[in-house]
Amino acid sequence: MKNTIGKAVSLAFGLAALGKEQVEKVVGELEKQGEMSKNEANEWISAVVEKGKETEAAMDKLIKERFQALLKEQGLATQEEVNALKQRIEALEQAQQHQQEQQ
Image (cartoon, rainbow, N blue to C red):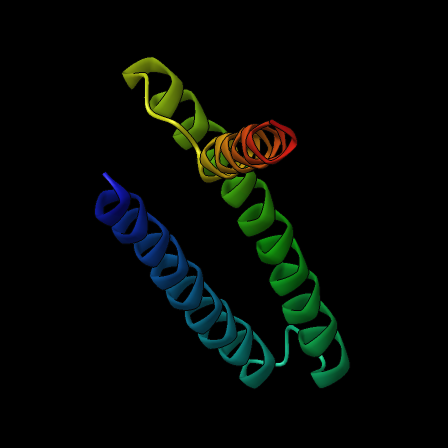
């Protein structure tokens, strides 16, 4: 499952990179044709790249939320839950050891 999520994230990054290249190509053509100034082209590319970053962040959040939901549906523990259980076990072992020392 972890590998599948990794592939999905890689695909998303690949599409984002392809999108930027395509945008630069289209904007470059508009600039060559005189329909857009160099300054306008740079501003437009920056705006599209920024929007892409925002979309990427939103997608990352959505993927993480969905992954957490899948873990819960399957009854699997998260790393945080495993760490919390380890801490509880260590505390219980220390308490037990302390009790044995007092006897």
